[in-house]
Length: 195
Image 1 (tube, one colour):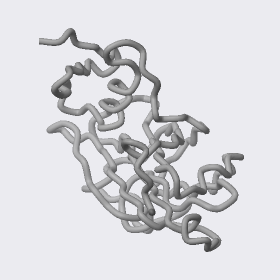
Image 2 (tube, one colour; image 1 turned 90 degrees about the vertical axis):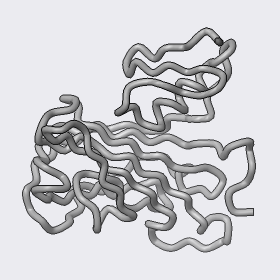
Image 3 (cartoon, rainbow, N blue to C red; image 1 turned 60 degrees about the vertical axis):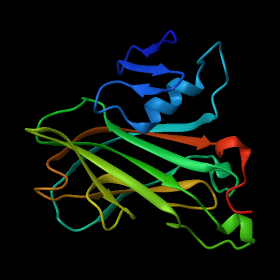
């Protein structure tokens, strides 16, 4: 058996033939651990480009834009990479509270030469809350139709809509400081996404 690499934060173990670890470990943690050096110091294909935090308390059942964040990074308007936006409650996992979301944008517009004012194109989002039974994931396709706190749109100038929506079952309590991180992900094997 290969010698494992362990991510001390998430107790994630990576082996040459797979990944094992805590049941609530996110895909991003697994890929980050593998990309950051299995077998001797490889380079990561995840580039962090921006970070901010928002204090959000929200109990309305209608979706709302909390902020349109001017990241200052227009390079996130791209068809060549996947844009990953990770949102987490800085207090960690709390029973009865919304914990965070993972949103991936695959943007076709730069590849086909069009420039709409914004895009919610190709969004895959998974939001997380913590119930009495443990962590719960609720998938949705766009920030306005899902629950919790998530990225809703990316704009050509690098702005990102941060959306919020409460539901007593799906989001649980939204009340915390939420850290927002933006990463650019290289496609697997450098295979172009829209070619």
